[in-house]
Image (cartoon, rainbow, N blue to C red; front, side, top):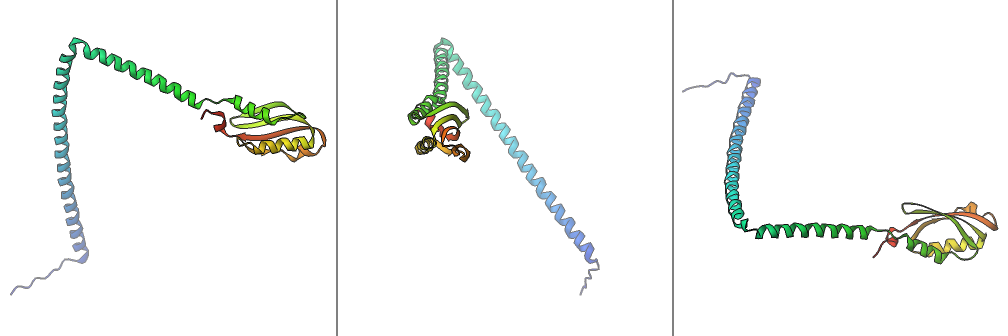
Length: 184
């Protein structure tokens, strides 16, 4: 009968277990690296074979196109591509074109006698109107007409413009809906 005694300290056992684990991880990494290397070599060889086939196809195609027919077709194809690109560029420019005349027509329909607009200032789609009004009621009516219009947003008529009863200098700020300036 044999009796085996394990006299190795617990810390030493843990170190041995860690060393065994590290060596197992290293072996697995080496194995995966070898598999990856084989896979990469396989891909490069596959790529080389495909490039050889592609080159042979290109050479035979070049021989067939020496009569000039394919060259003429390629030239036409390039011309079509250029023309199509120019047409799409023009269409894009036309689509993004802003027609400020629509704004002025809408504003002209809202302004009535008794209101005089002296200055129009724009920054992007933000608009400021400077002008004079004969009476406070006309100014309030103008603000209400602007508010009813779908293209004009966030109309701001400061209260200090409504202090005087007659001959009022005013400033009205509002935003313009950009879709109202574009072709639909």
